[in-house]
Length: 212
Image (cartoon, rainbow, N blue to C red; front, top):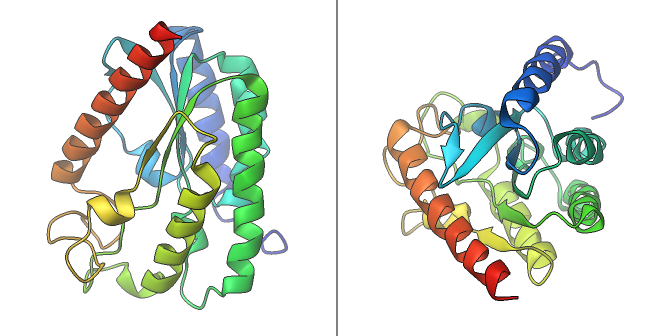
């Protein structure tokens, strides 16, 4: 993917500017929510008592996100982070070999959080809702495979794990009706569910930290 022109580059530049301005408002000690367009569209400014710095980049994939993580950790100085990336790696015709490379970049991202001693809550990409506008661009099998890999990498190395691939799925593994707006991006209903899940997970993580 790195050899191809990046149509998202102008948008990412704008996002860099917006995120830099928002950092000053959030200040150190906030929550860094980093990832792709699903993160960018997350519309809460706080979770619990923590202000949220939204570092979502529409269209970004794991390899492209990886070098941004240490820079954001250094400049934002968050007390905790949430990570959601991988949706844009699981496109149509994605192979298991390609997912091997994605997993390596994801492992490096987790290493950045660990190296900075910032606890991170990892989310797997949500499932695809069939027969909607963007469904044909993504591979349900690749999304499920990548989510399993993310769970394996994250277990024992992160502060929390929310497996949206399972939490938002119907009995067949596809997204439940109404979870997305276009087959991939979350609906208002799903974002409310995600917010509640994050609030519960982060509250539990805070309690554990205070006991240590």
